[in-house]
Structure formats: structure tokens, C-alpha cells
Length: 365
Image (cartoon, rainbow, N blue to C red):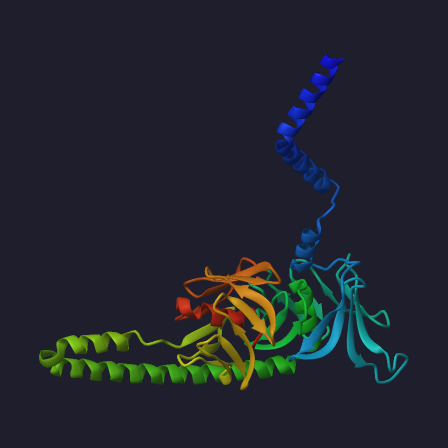
């Protein structure tokens, strides 16, 4: 009997001694079994919802508000796969009812309240839309093209046409869904043409300003060289110090998205988008939009909007939203979203990372 008890205790001791390795192996086998059965974790399901593919029903998904120029225009129901707009039908059989579009997850087709087909999405990025016809979404660059020309971009939360943000979702969704909704339903061909004209004008004005700045800089440099040469014998040390200080002056940061220049951050912190001053990034981290304090990027990298913490800019440039890493601002100014290069902040220094992140990731402007 004693021998039996001793043997049992030894077996138990051995089991507990190797419990960590056994648990790890059990966990690995469990994960393999889960994947083989097609069962996904909550995190995996959340990541699937952000992939540039046709959305699938999410029974626990909550309605997401859709905005046009920061104003609510409707909502997306991820459970019913339905877009419901605040606009109502004005006449006919459905007068007074909200305009709704329903997605078939198997085919990617959209139908109206009457059952009429009003477009289709494909996982290759092809979008057949009621407003712009057939357009193309590039999942690698987030670019949206029409007739071979890039007209804007769509991410997991917002859309921009020729540098102007016009549509957004209050939560993250598949960028394919966002591209269809914003470019295919919310905007018209005439509006696209107007935004293109605005951008072309802004680019021309920016180029003219840049040329003028280069001329002035060249004149200042020539004047400085002349002054330095004439006073080198009497104050060479002082002159050298002043010249060094002048050459290290801060430069204007040019902002690019999908290869197109859409704005700039001036040395005094003023922020311009499409040629218009839209706000200011102050030295203490405060972000002003049209004269009002809208938030701040604190010294520890925490980002606040209207008093609420919305994310974090880490010292290495990594960007976190809701505790999840979504992108980065690299030391050379390249901006990446979910591993894809979506923009560039030219002339950026390490001290500018937080301001650049506020513009590209936190929707202040």
C-alpha cells in the first residue's frame, strides 16, 4: 500500500514538474485544433473585419456612425450588413422611409430597399458604384482610382479625395466597405472634379510660394556670405556661430498622401491643408483647429481629443489607437498604415513626429 502511494506521489510530482511544458504543448495543440475547425479568437475576428475584403456578418457588431464632412449622415450595421442613411425617400412607394443599402456577403452585391441592385464589391478591389461607376481600390496603397487616375484614398476609418477629407466612420471597418460607401455613395463626379480643381490650384500656389522662398533663401544666403566675408577678420568666432544658427533654422514640412502634396506644417506651427490655414500645433503639444483647442499630444506621447485619450505616439514613431498598433511615422518622414506606406512628411525632424502623427492618424484636421 505504501509502495502504491509513493508511486502515485512520484507520478504527480513529475506531472507538476513539467506542467509548464505540458501546458504549452496543450495550448499549441488546442490552437491547431481550433484553426483546423475554423474557429477564430475575438482578436482574429476583429482583425478580419479590418481586412480590405467583403465584410461578413458580425452578430455582436454594433452600429457605426457614418459622417460627411464631420456631420452624421447615416450608420453601418455590421450584423445586418446594412447601410442606413438619415436621408429619406421623398416620394413613391417608400416615401418617408430611410434610404438603405444591403450587402450580400457571398456575392458582394448591394441592393436598395426595393431590391434593385445598386453596385457590387469584389475582393480584388473592384467597386461598381451608383455615383462614380466602376472605381478601383488598391489594398496595398489604400489608393482609390477612377479611369486609371488616383482620386483619393480610403483607410479603415476615413476617406479623402484630392487631399480633402470628406467621409469617415466612427469606428474601424474594412477599407473596401469604406471606399464603396464614401466614394461610391456619398460623393458625385461633379464634386470629385471640384476637389481636383481646388487641389490643382493649391499645388500651383504652393509651388509659387516655394519658388519665392527659394529665391529669398538664396538672397539671404548670398547676403550672409558677403557679410561674413567682410567681418571675418574682426569677429570670425561670432560670425561662425551666427552662420551655424541661421543654417539650422526649421524648414516647412511638406505633407504628401498617396504621392500627392496635400498640406504643410510651417516653422511657426501653422498647419495648412489644400492651401488654407486650418489650425496650429503649439510647442506645448496643444492642437488648435480653426482657432479652438481641440486636443493635445502630451510629452509622454498620449494623444487627447476633447479631453479623451484616443491613442499614443511612442518614442520610436509607432502609432497606437485603442491599444492596437495601427502604423508608424518613420524617422525619414515616411508614414505607414497597417504595414503600407500611405504618405510622407518631407523635411520632418524627430521633434515633429507627434505633430505629423496628429495629422495622419488622429483626424484633427
